[in-house]
Image 1 (cartoon, rainbow, N blue to C red):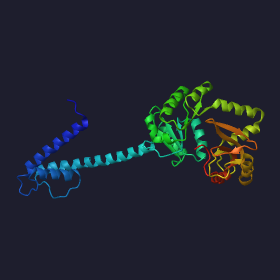
Image 2 (image 1 turned 180 degrees about the vertical axis):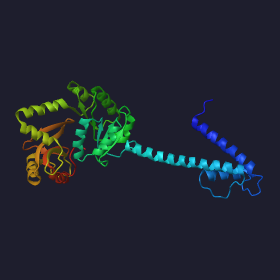
Image 3 (image 1 turned 90 degrees about the horizontal axis):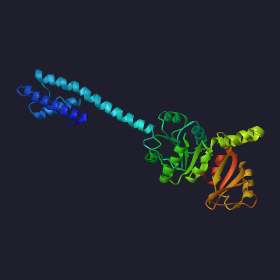
Image 4 (image 1 turned 90 degrees about the vertical axis):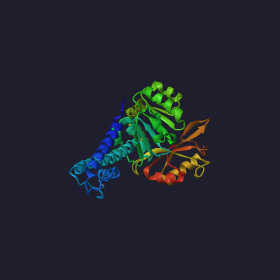
Length: 349
């Protein structure tokens, strides 16, 4: 019969205790000064000795009884060591599980990164400095400490997990994420992940970093909101540097999130019903933003037939309506004031 080792060990310990107590009673029962005369006395003495309590109400007086007593005393050191090591291991395991993200997060409206690489880090930098919360899933344990050494735990949560384990997405609150960003080395793996994710969580927008431009339409058909290819963006920027380098420098600067009050960047705000800009002419809004906040209105994003339509440099007469997204250029100094006047933070969250 196959008996598991822990159960066999417990059985042997119980057998050892029973035999020792029988011998203890045999030695002590005939001694006139002995306090151990029954199995109940022996069991109580065993218990208080092994647990290192040692009340002193029961103790052996015969040489044989004392020999067993010494055995119990030395055994109590093992019991104490076992308890300390068990508690220590439990604490360490809990801390390790928390470090690896197994206890989950309560982030909402956050950006979920699946896959971690140098490119993901550059993207995360921009999102992080935009004051957005980020949840990251990585399949490399070494990434966890590297990420936490760079970002604050109040704004960034990391989960170590296999990408194929979709049940773990509950730990990163995937159903309440605003956007999913996928960055895999293999485009086919990314496509499979998109399909499975979309079945479970249809609400978050999905952004994918592709390596092959030919698969762009395939990913869009699978439900991806935005498909990005590094080569496509880089080629346009390099071409701009060739014949209009100042424009390229400006574009690159505006693409980055502002990190100081002097830095400029481009961002967007949703037009809420309570903001003062709703149902006003875009030209009027343009002048007010420039005069009061040193902010330039660049465009409007409107919903038409369930699709976003971008209007660049909207002409006079274009209404700013509830639900639109207004795109502006401003420096870091104006951001707090803009958040107050728009009654929201920047971005589609």
